[in-house]
Image 1: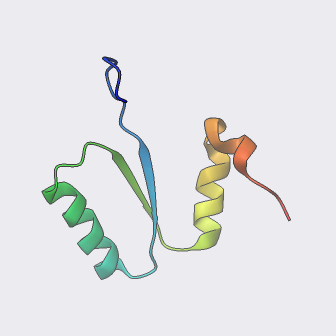
Image 2: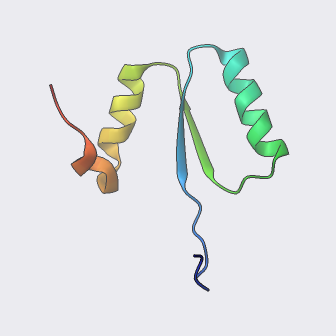
Image 3: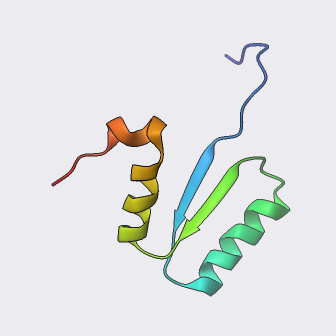
Length: 64
């Protein structure tokens, strides 16, 4: 059930090594007028670096 609270945009991390595929996904989000924050990185290492920089997500990461 949705309460009468203002919904905050969520952060979406797109990990895609193909710039053309990433552009297609980004364009699809824009065309759908999805009001979330979309971040694109090209590989898993960049994704992990991004996630480590996000303080609110740090406790979800497992270092191996």
